[in-house]
Amino acid sequence: MSRVCQVTGKRMMVGNNVSHSKRRTKRRFYPNLFTKKFYYQEEDRWITLRVSASGIRLINKKGLHDALKDAKSNGYISIY
Picture 1 (cartoon, rainbow, N blue to C red):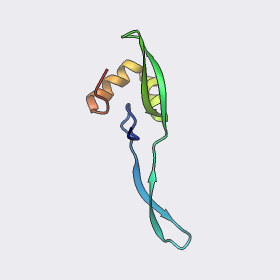
Picture 2 (picture 1 turned 60 degrees about the vertical axis):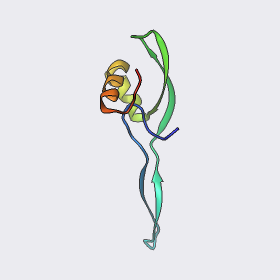
Picture 3 (picture 1 turned 30 degrees about the horizontal axis):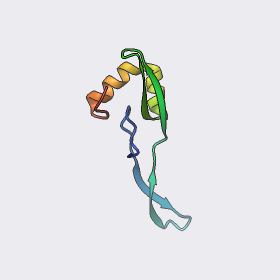
């Protein structure tokens, strides 16, 4: 499973480790992902999503139905 948030679309970024002598080596910045179960009232069932911390806050703010609808319209998720 790739490291992509299913709600916000956040994914791994690439950058540099910079030492004290300013030598640069490649590194990766991973999103803060969690596998979390949410209760989806519209379909009366539990769904499991791989979401980032900001995705969880977005679901708390907008609601699960609206967050999934926006994620589907942006192409981050294909089902629901």
